Amino acid sequence: MMVPSVAVPIAFTDIVKVMERIFTQDIRVSRAKFKQGLEKTLAVKESAIFHSGMDALCALLKSLAASQPEKKEVIIPAYTCPTVLIAVENAGLVPVFADININTFCIDPLKTVEKISNNTLAVIVAHMFGAVTDISAILRSKAGMNFSVIEDFCQTAMTDIYNPGIISQRGDFAILSFGRAKMLSTINGGAVVTYKDEYVSAVRELDVQNGIYDGGFFCDMKYIFKMSVFGLAVRPVFYCLADKVLARKRSSDKFNLKAYRKISSNSGLCNAQYILGAIMLDRLKSMNGIRKKNGSYYLSHLADKDVFLQDAILDNYYLRFAAVFKDKRFKKKVTDVMKSSGMKLSTGDYPVLSTVAGTEACTEDARFPIASLVASDILLFPTHPMFDAWEYNPFKNLER
Image (tube, rainbow, N blue to C red; front, top):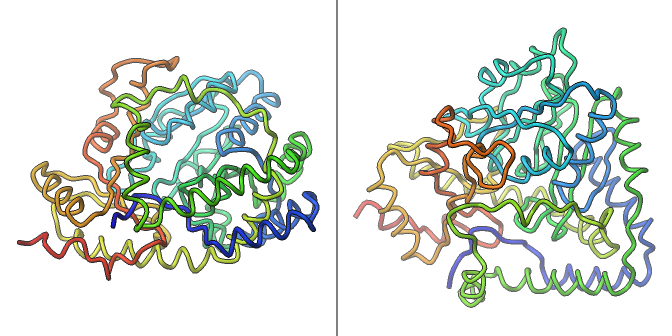
């Protein structure tokens, strides 16, 4: 058996429920139920649903740029998912990179504040691998400056984030992703949300402009097929076969952005996806509990080792457990142990964004040493709900 690095925990019973409801539940009803469930779970004031997190971020940036056309710069982490950079460029804006913090693997607030200018339209804070980082220094810098703080929660648990007690410590908007490898999956999808009254109308307008995508029966069938494939392929007993197929499609060392630049022509999700999303929301808390438990396994074995691990202001639910290795020999040993145990590791595949071929800001830049270190020496351990790390115990041979 093999344990995949990421997995969509779709059960056969979930697919049966989706198939039953697409014939009896109109897409507008399904969409409303999903939005209501999402807003209740996150305690947000309003949400706008999109085909992907990248589409959601791009639409938000275009809206902000329309209201402040004189501002062209968006500050983003030098190390994060490259789709953040694509969204900025697709919105016709200029990315300004800030290095990350070695204790969080997220954008460094102090280095970010240094980059803020009168030309700054927005600052995007990506919370990496499930850890929610402190952005209070960035929020304080808003005094006297007219820019938006956008939090990228695409990799977070989507629970306990919007605790009413810390709303004043959060940004103006947040971006969510419902992609295949995310905490809450509808195969693809994304959203813009806000929990602040002053931005409700802006998010509502985005939702109205985006409209409702209804691909009809054949679109529903296509996504039910995808749900079945992904739900089955990532189960440990079948993944050894699926991995051989996936290996042929994996990217090379350089992350090529050209294939990802196109904004989706679909405005949202189909009926089957909204129904699946509502089902997944009901299980989100229990699934995140498993992720947290699995993350605690790696933490217990690596906390006293020569590695950098993430700090967080909230409990980590771990989309994946991230560790940056100072000793390459120890990194290889851990990699070998995980491989021999049948567990799939990931290196994240994220480059330092200022060096990515095909971007407008393509320069070999040594100004981001922490981003370079993390990009080269990170390992990401699986935490998804398809297995129990404590029972699997892949590190049992680590000390031998």
